[in-house]
Image 1 (tube, rainbow, N blue to C red):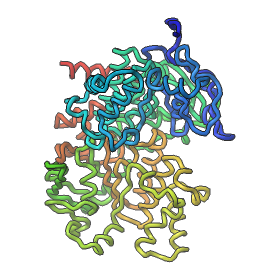
Image 2: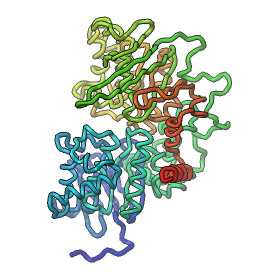
Image 3: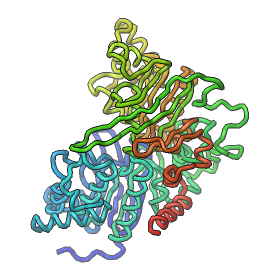
Image 4: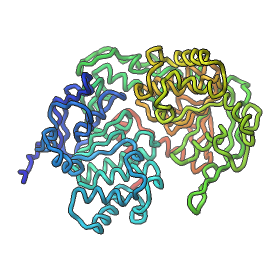
Length: 588
């Protein structure tokens, strides 16, 4: 039997952790502590080593050489044999993964998966395990927990699936909870609920939480202390308020400068880590130079006189797209769900029109209906005077050369066995345009246009970063020279700097190629930056539509105001005050 741990023993201690894949060091001498009941953040761009560090704590990294020390209380994790390692996973430390749909078994009920997690860590009867599963689901905020226990993962929304993952993680009553991007791709209101839930777990269970995120607004509202990672190193560590108010390392300053929120200047390109900070791989270096993102004039977020802002159509610009009263209903078991309910709007040439709302509001279904990918039940979609719905396959195929889409997940949208050049040339081949040499040359032109040089052309998708894959997806969408592009959550899964690079690229391409965008997103900060006209969707209907300045200054609908109130800000003082007000309002 283990002796009681001293009160000063950290719940988790990582010392000089180094993780090598062959000759490549993914994590380089990382050290940090987590006290019981603490809220600690690990932030940085994709590829900085955040997730590898977290997986190493649970010894889940495959094919790597790991050195250093990882201690959970008095337990040396790196010295454990396989049997003891399996015992501490879930009971001492547990993990919440980014994509719950990939982690949950689609053929087993939610109840079966939670009870399995319970029985792995305790000797209880099946009935007691099921009762405990109901308690856990209720604790994480799943309504009608007893009833929902027999549902399958696909019958839960994204936010509810994430709550199920948290319930499973809590099944063994761990002392340390690692949350690896738990809110990525969730809309702002669901994101806020998940963070509130983690907050409550810390308060009620005294669990230490390590939050891994690229969302600096989320980190600001939740974390007491933050470690910033770059190239496998922790380059800066500080209390949250100190780090955001006075960042010392150039890389930290560049990350903060790349945040797009409701205060971002819409008239200027977004600073990125490539623009602001030289590459430095040494730990904290105090640099007194002003941040490159600091404006020289007051930032109102509105265009100065004479400024040209992408996404705003020229005066008198004709309509390119008109959607009139479209409806779409899907059958779900013995019932029907009206996904789109009498939606109407128009988009002018050269405009970026925003479609926002929570998950399940009908945004993506509207996009699919516009492109003719989903047949509508009623209404009309007109593109440049041509009625899209009702077209035959040949006419629709020809029209789609002028209308393209960029999806949320580039890895899922790209054939993983094809090279970058072949992927971009594929639409030309599908439409019978040019010979093989001409298609290859055109693909190279498009890749150069989106900033991918010759060193990338023969790579496979798995050899690219998330931002590079999204650039390939954009190049593929543009290779047919379309006039209209649907961007369906095209930057929601990217970290702040990659997101900034892609947004800057989209605005530059819009001006150079005279493109028109339908920008579908749940991120209101990004929508404000990109769009001149915005429609807000709820339960399949547009509940409010207005120009950017009007919508964000004076929203008319309570639902719009609630969405805006849930947008996180990269400022711990402001963000924690906002969350406190939100919690008080819910309690009242």
